[in-house]
Image (cartoon, rainbow, N blue to C red; front, side):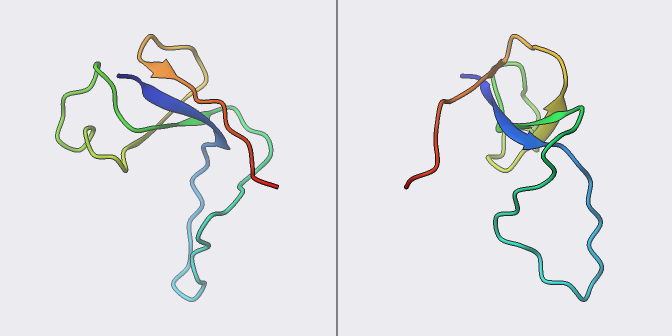
Length: 73
């Protein structure tokens, strides 16, 4: 029951009202923080327990794991 560290770099990108929001953007290739998706045993708030919850970090945490995956050919 851990949150998931993902390869995406955490970045706040402000969209103006005229542009369409991309469905699955690749984001920046480098950055200090990485996205952490989901929740874990360490969280108990209502907003943190949602599947869409996002966090970020640049340090190891006891409640974060990762999943090995690759793009299909």
